[in-house]
Amino acid sequence: MIMDNQSSSTINELVSIQELIKNGVTFIENVTIKRKPYPNLSSVYLIQPTKENLNFIQEDFGNK
Image 1 (cartoon, rainbow, N blue to C red):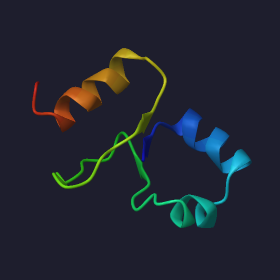
Image 2: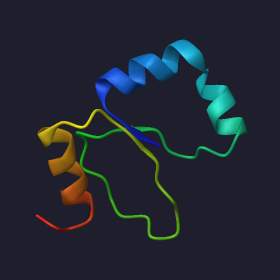
Image 3: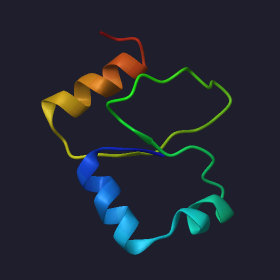
Image 4: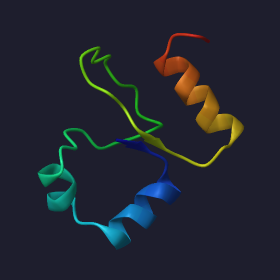
């Protein structure tokens, strides 16, 4: 699960980290952090539709 700061704050108010892990979430990271590719894992992005966040997604997919 990859989130921006706003989404992270919202999720933290609704669900505990333990609940996310219990339901199969293996990584929780901020969209601004450079990540290694994990080709065998699916990702869910919970972000606001800002230009900056979209640029981070493009970097993740190598389409810069």
